Image 1 (cartoon, rainbow, N blue to C red):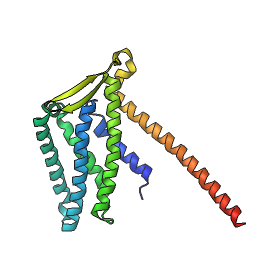
Image 2: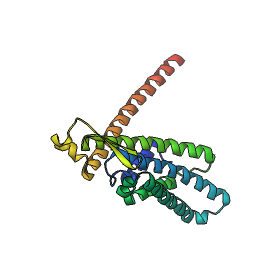
Image 3: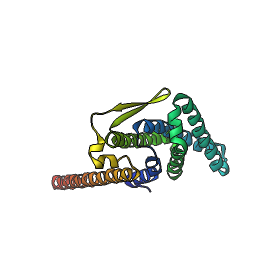
Image 4: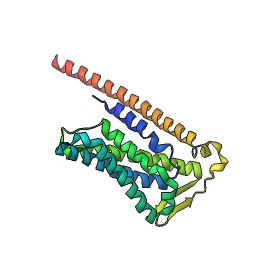
Length: 217
């Protein structure tokens, strides 16, 4: 059985492909998070449809065709809405595709039905999306000194009074090594917090068991 901690580690590890190659702008993360969530829902739907139709032998081919087609369609629609984003992201459109397939492949759950499976997947996808948005927001603000948002035919750039050029460490966040360092910081904080929570919960369980034993006596 896969524990929740191991599952989260796998989500973060598989999404390194989602985080690292992307331009460190908040606007692009919004665009790709939307695609990621659509693909996660579609992958879940397709797995259950293929399972019900009893054509598991064709699963990989059908699934790959569906999500790649979705990525291409999404990119073409984006080229109409915001051409600069479609041009800048380029091959990055296919990285959420890879991520969603890997995640869903390792965490299949047919036993509890489509609705429950979809709910669990979209909940996990939601938390992953929040992490991605926070990650790119930090890179945008501290690496570039701006907040960017997608808009019709353009990217809105909101300059901040903060100048990242004044602090070399901030500019570092805009680079690929900087993004790797930021991921490492997030992981370190998460591991530290989870360990503290586990210690507190274990102490609480011990105290509860001791109180129960005394009451029995």
